[in-house]
Amino acid sequence: MSDEILKKIIELTKTVEKYNYQYYVLDDPLVPDYEYDRINHELMDLEKQYPQYIQPNSPSFRIGGAGELTLMPNSLDLTHGPWTREDLEEMWESMQAVLPKDAFRDFRSYVPFTDGEGETVAYVLPADPGGSQWEICLDPADMGDRDYFLETVLHEYCHYLTLNHRQADYRGEPTVETYCEDGMVSREGSYLDDFCQRFWTGYLDDRLADLDSYNFFLRHEEDFVSSYASTDPSEDISESFAFFVLWDVPESEAVWAEKLRFFLDYPELTEFRRQVRENLGLEQPEQAA
Image 1: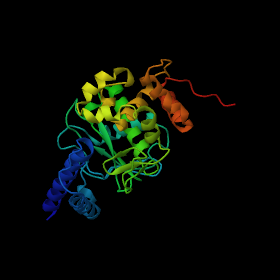
Image 2: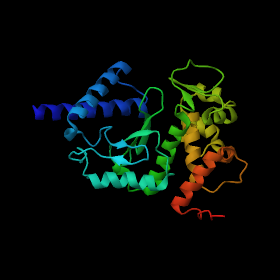
Image 3: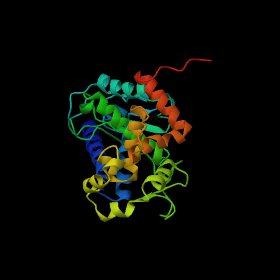
């Protein structure tokens, strides 16, 4: 009986991981939402009954309210990699050491995964239908390139900052008044809508007319920090935010530089930048008065 339960949990864990990747990374869902929910709930019910069988790539890497990581007792080796419990904890701790203290207050779980070195480094995704709780997924195979890993974590964290329930409505009807994506309506005055209104209204038609984002990038190369940023407003703000945090504030009048200075309009994002740069040794700590 125990072997059958373990086999079922491994099977469901791999299935949910695959569905998450297809939906949130590739934007190509394999099953309807109701089928995903059914499988996810079946997995969660089994994990509650048999915590000794929880897999390390399960959403059972839980994050507490103060950002503490709780790893459930299990073998703690990813089935397709040589990582131990200590490796996965170190990956979490290294990210926590860089971001501000309360950065993960809305995150429910940390999910290690791997698709091999040099592929997807990290991604975030809502852990509930309204976007009030989140998960962060990291690939230990990509920890070797620390600079790129850090840049990607900041990029993905910006997705959370701009798409959480305070910034976006996942139940609202699409509108022409604010920026929308499939299943998401950005709120008026949100970071993403402000960014879109300021930088994308002039060439949205151009972008939609040509789905080849690299050709679009070449036509507007001075407007983006990278070719990937030209994909859409959501990727643009996230790429720009990562460079805003890591680079000195530019003085250039180019549009890409204006995008980095855009975040200075928000004291909370400027403070986020200061704390990360201080943690990285890019800025001196502020002296107490």
